[in-house]
Amino acid sequence: MSIVYLALGSNLGDRFQYVQKAIEELKACGLKILKLSTVIETDPYEAPEQGCFLNAVLKAQTDLSPEELFLHTQTIEHRLGRKKKIFRGPRVIDIDILLYDDIKLVTPQLLIPHPRFLERSFVMKPLEEIDPALCASLKP
Image 1 (tube, rainbow, N blue to C red):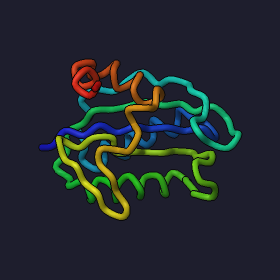
Image 2 (image 1 turned 90 degrees about the vertical axis):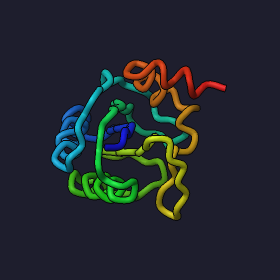
Image 3 (image 1 turned 120 degrees about the horizontal axis):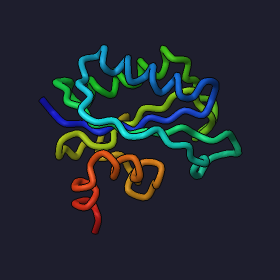
Image 4 (image 1 turned 45 degrees about the vertical axis):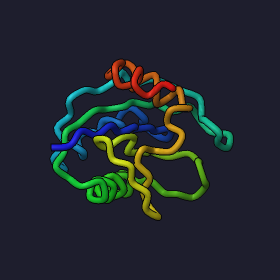
């Protein structure tokens, strides 16, 4: 089983409900949630004007490959109603793979580790809550 860290965010509709639904869908895909951060409210980051986000990070075990996990996250986003109309625009749910074991993966659809996640407080604050040792190891 591999260890993965996922970031979840929502800024449309019942934001908390969308984050919760996404977590339930991830469990249904076979992810075993080991830790879940507090859900925090944050301002949009480098994005067009829009409402505040609810963000969370989770740590899970999976036997899915990175590509399979990515397909599941995209399917969940679509099933919950995400429509990609504007780059970094409002969304009902966003699920990003931050880390997958120690893998470094570059494909046209998927970059692991997620680019620039270390610069984003809406990711790092919840990540530090659930795994401070990991965060300490990521600092230069």
